[in-house]
Image (cartoon, rainbow, N blue to C red; front, top):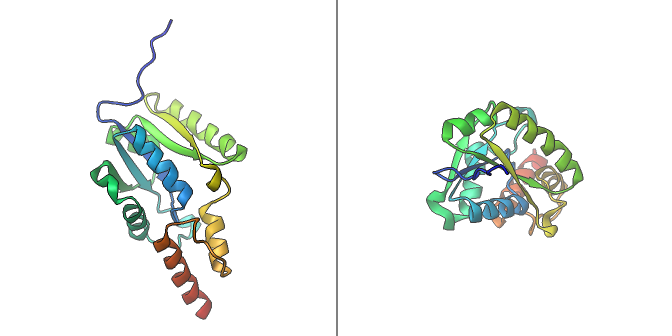
Length: 174
């Protein structure tokens, strides 16, 4: 029988990567559940200029920090481009946290998890299924609804809903 190795290293650091443009209640659910398992979670914000982000990285970090003030220093932030496993190794993290909403997410994440494992055998991916209330919510969908004047309250934290309304009000007035 093989002995299993704990995925939590001595620091207990997990990395939750994403663009989070904007953070949704689904993202926050995954993040809180990861914080229930790991002592420290580093949220890596991908600037991803190919996606033309609506919010700056500082705004995105602020939204997350404001939504989860109770976690204080257990919640860390970094802006990172490049191979995620390189960031994990450099930070001493042995776990990547990912959320799954639907079967399509699984297929996409499955490929990345295997590639990351090949590139860095000491870094595993842990998946959390989203709460059923959030399984259809994505940042792209939230932005689309907000851009058309729809109500996104309940899908994102209140400050994010207000910021979306302000951004799209300016855009439509231009």
